[in-house]
Image (cartoon, rainbow, N blue to C red):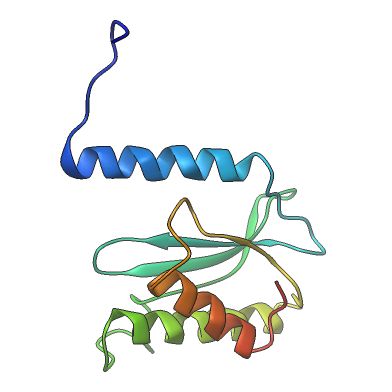
Length: 127
């Protein structure tokens, strides 16, 4: 064991692993004006999706389960993730975005992340 290295347990270990994966993914994924980055941030209760132009450093569109149109909606967390995916795709299209690069944020492409991506594809965003 290296000196100064803490051994993490439980949830702290999980968050650190997600952070490591996200850093590794971001080495190869960049959002441009033509194809901005669709970033998904997931917590235990909520999910947030943002369409970001990395060159300018601007958020072009965003949606989350905290939006008034989705908050308190019916269904489980996967159903709410589908609503967020459709809403972010609608807002991105209104901002003039047709295609995006998907950034899963270090999370596994399953469950709520996959539901959000599928709903965004169905709403017309190209990955």
